[in-house]
Image (cartoon, rainbow, N blue to C red; front, top):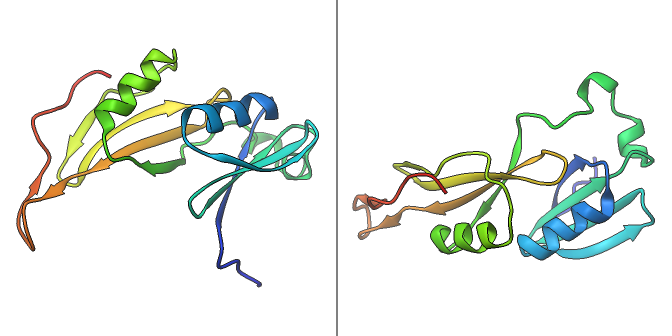
Length: 143
């Protein structure tokens, strides 16, 4: 194997590569890296390389039909201010797939891309000091 040290790659199968590129670049801070016609594009955010494979791409054609739909996996994007992100994405008309959930490690909410692939937005809990307890805060509810 020849692992890349530069990026960690995840492939999402999508019906419309252009719509997927627009979703990730317009709403989630990704930048377009490569576009190969309507079949394939990849977008970058930090070290994450998200491969967006349309129906004509080799990645989609190699996928067994019973595994071609969106799965139970999701990419996890860390954000500094989850409330601000929820407000911004709601104003853009994006549907949320979960309520805001708070746990000991932080808060999270799920959205879906145009093909139903899940994206988790996560705000880590703030630490009160070295080794001290996490501060999650009283915020939770429906986004």
